[in-house]
Image (cartoon, rainbow over all chains, first blue to last red; front, side, top):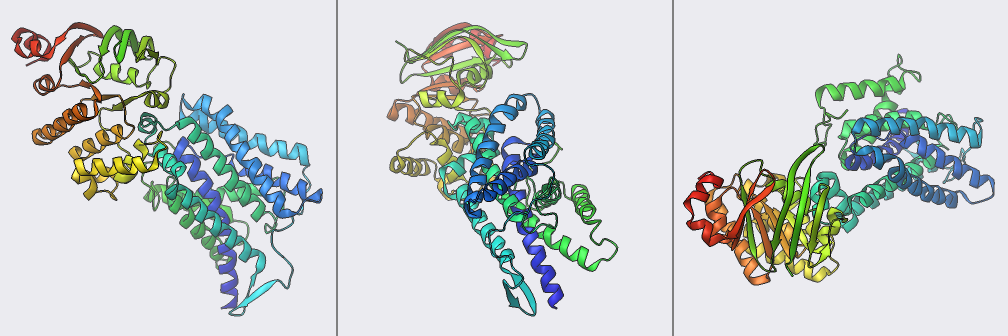
Amino acid sequence: MDIFLERLFDGITNGTVYAIMALALVVVFRGTGTINFAQGEMALFTTYIAWALTTQGIPVWSAALIACAIGFVLGAAVERTLIRPVRRRNDMATLIVALGLFTGFNALAGLLFDAETKTMPGLFPGGQDDYLAVGGARLYFDALGVWLVVAVLIGLVFALFNRTRLGLHMRAVADNPESAALAGVPTGRILMLGWGLAGIIGSLAGVLIAPLSAQQLSLTTMFPILIYASAAALFGGLDSPVGAVVGGLAIGLLEAMITGYVDVIGGTLQQTAALVVIVLILLFRPTGLFGTRQMERL
Amino acid sequence: MSLLNVTGLCAGYGPARVLHGLDLTVEAGEIVVILGANGAGKTTTMRALSGLIPHTGAITLDGRPLDALSAPQIVAAGISLVPQGRGTFSHLSVLDNLRVGAALRKDTAAIAADIDKWCAIFPILAKRAGQEAGTLSGGEQQMLAVARALMSRPRLLLCDEPSLGLAPKIVGELFDVLADVNREQGTALLLVEQNADLALRLASRVYLLEVGRVIAEGDAERFRGDESIRRAYLGL
């Protein structure tokens, strides 16, 4: 029972991070029509900045907030300068730019912060004794903290989408860009803000996962997260924020249970398992659980 | 000075020119209809006027040049388009569709009052307020599209084939509302219509388009009576 609970907690913790990373992918996909494969590496870059700030004595919470702010500027700037000019041509061009950014941001992080593994301080107490005993299992405070931060973030993003004018305009642009422009919505600015929002969410995901990741903060920290998040977004439906959250949690739990209980897969085939999920979903339900749009673009 | 003044309008899609120097005017509070066969450039005219496609030539609204403006800026200037095929936001609720229509307005109380007004004029919108627009029938979506376009309180409303695919009864209701809007709010209307009989009853002036040019213009009265023009250009 207790080992099951610990796997459950692990699954939820990873799942929440996949969920918000998937949410970032969905926010961009809805507006721009392609998966931003560079989302993970952009988050990696800002997480490195947060780490660098903490080494200068800046408290980790402040560093995280600064990383989010930089993530916003970075996302918005990338949309404005690199995506918008090629987007008019076709979606494939956008995809290629995203792949270029993927390698670019990774290389830039390596160049500025070298390839040594860093120890990213956690946002929450992460000692051996900082846990709640739940049914014989240990629920560590740092995991619980991640759950809470993610829950608050998801609440804020949904409030933004459903309760604010900006969110309404974002949904309108995602639904029908031409009609949105005809109603007076500045579609370019809305897309830019969407990329900025995704940048904030991604940065937060990076800062949350790096202290908990087995690899700590290294140049490969975010790649598996992006793979899982893509699987999550596809699972939930690429244009559905609700789907991203549900998909993220589902993938996190699947990962924890499969690696825990299916010996063959163990720790080495985890990502393959996620990729198998992607393929199965694309085969049987191309729009995902909550998706509406046909994914003919992929 | 006319409300809308278009001179030498040329536009098209990529290398394909559709409009070859089109001239037209719409006076304040006037209803004008553009008639012409398929491919004459009616929809292209509407799209160029709304800033959706690039053009050469001059477009002014109340003397103000619109040529360098984007689609949202043209809405801000006072022109609103009900596009062909309606262009409602199919995954947004009816209410949210109307709210997006007021994207440029800041007068929250007046926006709410306008939404109430349109829900009173089109009771079906009130009934379906929370429903996704994509679940509405064609006629209901067209009413929503017109109401949404009018939410920006335009001085000139462009309607691209509002009757397309609708039952005659619905079309009648819709044209009654358009006439009311014109009479009560002084909104000028520029319509593109296949249904010439209906359009000629509503409009005061007519432009006949053929391969991207105006080949005849005049009072709707004259076209109503003129069988030869009707046969030649309206396919009746």
